[in-house]
Image (cartoon, rainbow, N blue to C red):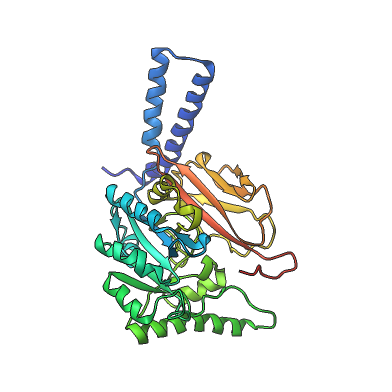
Length: 382
């Protein structure tokens, strides 16, 4: 029988109080050195209550994985070795993960129906190593994938050709838009008017769509921001074009995620080396954040991030890391978290990463992108 609305509204706060009480009692008993059978039974009972009161992930969710080069001869910071890539695929297979193309996972999230342990494998930039070291291995497993194509470099050295992209489609790949020239969309050069900037951003997106449609008969509905960079204004343009956007900030995606800037876990460089870390990321859940997120263009060196959570989430379990290491978190009476770094943002891209461990050992994960200009107001060269 369904609970009355008034009781349903009180339930989350009750569960939160149970979790807090269980943790406090356990800590006090351990500090006092109690080890009798009766004490242990009390601790066990409260442990059961705490685990039962932990919020379950009723929200449909999934994880988008991001790769660039699959190679040992390309820049390490944007490369995953073929051996590491193979290890990732084998771990997903052994652990019974479902692999969907990004478009299908998005449809599942919107419908609120995604199988447990589902990921989408994505690639940015259309590098030549995709056909040599990645796509055939995915096809052999019957796994689809998504490639975001910057159309300008196609056919150049180190990149796929248009004929190669035909082969990608045959091997089960779907194609997304990654702009024409892979430029920093949010940057406006001195002297460029807002109207001129908007027209240039629109042409970057529309030009790539036109090329993919004319050369491959593909009209992409997915878009990946070059370098994972965006601004609120760029997001608005992407939304207006009816595209689903992807960044490079980490975390899982859920039904209530912002579909103009979905998170992906980048697995290039050192991030692809640790298989245990890969396993943790593949199993993550979205952090239950509510409300709009801030403009990522930082206007001060230590911007504060304010997060509001679902009522049944206990923010006391939250841990956040950013420039300088573990960040300061202040919680108000409403359960909102005010998060501040302990060091200044460096010029360029930075992120605040926040996680919360569940009773089952999985992590809720959220990441906020920041982009900081240099002290003279100019952008950091790529």
